[in-house]
Length: 323
Image (cartoon, rainbow, N blue to C red):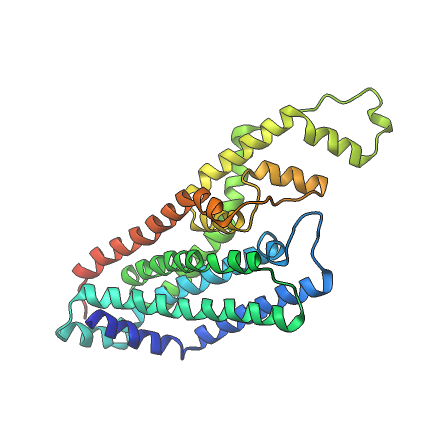
């Protein structure tokens, strides 16, 4: 109960901060942008089957991904260091409450804050779709709602990372700067590094066997020959496999895969690349149960990535000298 009391108090403080209000406003803008663009542009029937598949298998998914991770890591970054700077942490530990209860309460408070912001995003997205007349099928809505616990788990992973930094870094400003760097690293730098390393390991794509009349072919015809070439498909598979190995400890990668598979994305990335090149469906008919069975390993990794930083934070906080 003491941990719950800390969590409720932390939640009440969090929802009053400008940081929380800005992030909720960002979710609202993102939701409106997704729905409005679908209304104006329509669904690309050659690639997707439903509006929500188009949303979450396109660039909007990355924006949603970034918003969750940024909010989570920033919430955690000031959870301990902020209390320490204000002198309230010293008061808390002087009360009949154990340190593990304080840290657990901080984590639960962050989870409640993340949960509220995500609930608002999910509700507002459906509301915008209904108001603007974007058709939502039952399966579309089911796929969308099934992603909620995984979105929350993903946010908790970054919240746990933020707590880790807040425990080791005394000043909240420094912890916030480090949190922003961690966000940038996982969201942008690591994927770029993985791509470069994969190219260095696998090498350049093979030169395809071109027909004698290659000079007379159009650019689209040449592109089709290259993509269909077995050697190129093998090279593409090796590039994807190498990149995935490098990204294996990235929560962004695993969350992205969960969302992609739950919305019916083709399992193999090289199949998706080929589908995009041919302007054919990048999705396939699959039940939600089948999709869940395909992402269990990604979910397990997300759980581990959420628990491990919190465990290190717990060990540090239990031994930390508080002045």
